[in-house]
Structures are given as structure tokens and as C-alpha cells.
Length: 188
Image 1 (tube, rainbow, N blue to C red):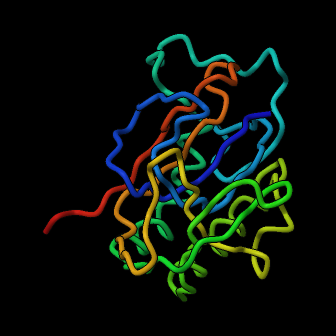
Image 2 (image 1 turned 180 degrees about the horizontal axis):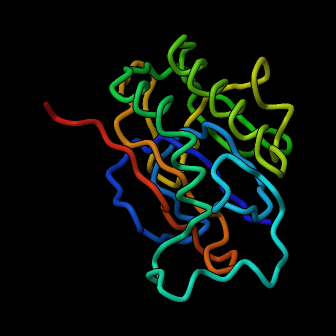
């Protein structure tokens, strides 16, 4: 299984950026999911692959990740439609076990909820599972977790201008995270 997550970064990031699991740039989670490897050669097919068949083609560049590319292709339309949407920061709350994770809630937004719903719909069609089903669709509570001194303030606004697909265990290791695909708003 691949552990992936779609997020909107609030801080500047770059595609391919790898960072420690406990030092994320500020971000808004869109959907977290696990996916089994599937045959990306059969366009549109989502058939599980045999483990021996998961190696890239011999003439494919080593940096090509067919699974990530296929998922990014499926997500591209709703993500690019959401780019530029402005969001407002609401008050603080505590998430996680006993409310121990400080977060800033994001004010409800039709555009953000639509993006979340579309990404959930796409992920549900993949072979795998949504890691936190209770926090999707009607249970979705958009927020940005604090990271040390890094945090947003109530009343701040930001644009969805850096939406990414992130690998939660690049190369099978869980110590870091890697941005596999980054969609950015054109500064036109």
C-alpha cells in the first residue's frame, strides 16, 4: 500500500521537496488515503498488480512514478478548478487525542468543500481506502495545524495556490514526506 495525502500548502514549497515527518510546512489536509498498486498501463483500469510487476519499465526514467502520475491525472481537473480560491482563518481548536493538537479552523467554503468532495470521490474509485473516513464529506473539518511557532491567526486569509499530492512514506521509509505533484496558480 502507498500512503498518500492531498494537501494545500500555506507556505512556499516545491515539487520533489522532502521534509521530516514532524516538520511539515503549514498545510490544509484535503484527503488522506492508502492505495494499493494498480495497473496504470490499462488506462482507466484499477486492477491490483502482482508485487513482482511493480517495477518501472526498463527504459522509463527512474524518477517516473506511474502510480503517482495516474492519481495526479485523476485529480488534476478539480484541483486546477480550485486554484486561487480564497479561504479565511477562523478560531483555534484542539484536534487529536484529548485535543492535544492545536489547529486553526478554516471558515466554511463551498469551493473548498467541493474540492474535498471531488477528491474523496476520486480516491473512493481507487483500490485502497481513505485513512480517516469519519473526517470526510459531512465530517470534513478543514484546519491548519500549528507547527511550533508557525501558525495562522484568526482573520488571516490565504489562497489555494499550492495544492499537492504527498507521499507519506517515500521509498518505503516513514521518517520523511515527499511532494510528488504540485499544482500552482498561474500568476497571470
